[in-house]
Amino acid sequence: MVFRGKPSKFCERCRERRLRCDLQQPSCNSCIRVGAACTGYRDTINIRISDQTDFVRTKALAKTRSPLKQRCVGEPKVKLKVRHLPQDLLTLGRDMFFTYYVSDFSRTWDFLYNYLDPRSAPKYLTLSIEAVSLAFLSHQVSSETARDLGRRKYCQALREINIALQNSTTAKAASTFEGALLLDLFEKIMKSALEINTSGHAHIEGALTLVKLRGVESFKEGTELRALMGLSLNATICSLSTGRVVDPSIRQIRVHAAQFVNTDYPKWKLSGLMLDITDLAAEMRKGFMTAEERITKSEYFDRKLEIVATEASPAWTYERKSLSDPDGARMVPAGFPRVYDVYPDRMITQMWNVLRIARILLCEEIIQSCSESCDPEVAAQCNRANTAILTLVQEIVASVLQMTDCDLVAKDKLPIGSTGKQHSHSIPHILDVYILIFSLYVVAWSKSCPQSAVDWSLKHLQHIADHFAIKEAAVILNILRKQKREERISPWDRVFGQLSNAPKDIWMQSAYSQGHDMDSTPSE
Image (cartoon, rainbow, N blue to C red; front, top):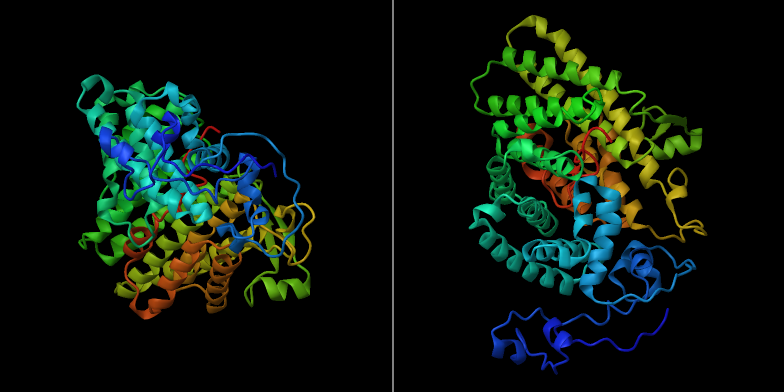
């Protein structure tokens, strides 16, 4: 570590103008006199770090009182690179956001590389990037200062983008559309899983309006198209959570994108089927379909998804490995195959589990509708659905250990030199674990899932909440514990309505559906 001198607590405006800031709340008098918005005062404890990139991975070990300490077990020796970069929350947030979210987690946002230099971006877009970066920083290090400053930046960005929308030229600009996407991401990061509701999709609807205003055909191959496809995914999940059919513009986006992507890629086929399943869910919610109609349509789409899975190789490949008898008894649910799967990357893991989740929900609908049907011949369809759920649950279970078992299977993800309980977790490792939360929720939610797998999923959610300090796992675990199995409501209402837009894109990332993930173009 290199001591760079005690950083100033002064607000941004006073620092830039070398003025003496009186640090008054909620705004310093210097800003009040000129009618400027005061950015607030820096958290000087959190900004005394010389290496921005390594800060994200090593802050827990470099500072004894860091909020990231809760993510570490023991204190291994970590070699820090020393570089001299400007130190403030905005810089830390931008470095973390670009390094771990834009570069690693989701290619949807690679259009932001065009605006690495704030001078090359409109004011509303710069403010939007700052707001999202601070929100991401706040979530990772539990910084209230970053959270509050991020909210102020968000309000400023919202005002600026509303001004831009008043002009027909700037309203059609790519940067305005991109700003709307950033404001939506900010809200997803800052809101808890239980706060997301039908009123939380305003920016998605606004972005779709801008697409219609600009014209789908104007979006070019590359970063623009990836951003457009990311919007189409977000909008699809919003439709699922609100019980509405897919906006026609989403299908127009796919028609346009089909000119530039590999439509044989399994990810493309899966995302197309999700549009149809969304419309089916909206139709079923109306309550006009007979049990037999629900069975027929659910089984049709389940078989379509099964075909995608069958034809996925070699684009989606993974390796199945066996566990020793002692390890298997400890690491998998009772009665399950003692195996685990290793996937090439986070995206392929997520794609497989999205497909499996969709099939589980369809099969649950088939089983429920069979119980309401008077047709004796539906018994075979019910048996097939039960068998499919068991297989799908086994596959989801086998995908978990590669991320979560730090003692054995996921040991290679730990920092070099980690031994036994003495280890920390990198941000990429945390994001790897994050994508599993929604899958574990569905396994524990499924009525047809074996009880041993339900208990195993609950245990793993608790492990993720405690060992990896991921608060969303604790939120979802609390939901599962409160709801009784015999009182569960429609899977479309509970699963998609409550959790699909949870922060950091649990579903999209793709994941908070991220989330991670389904949000980049299928040609990658």
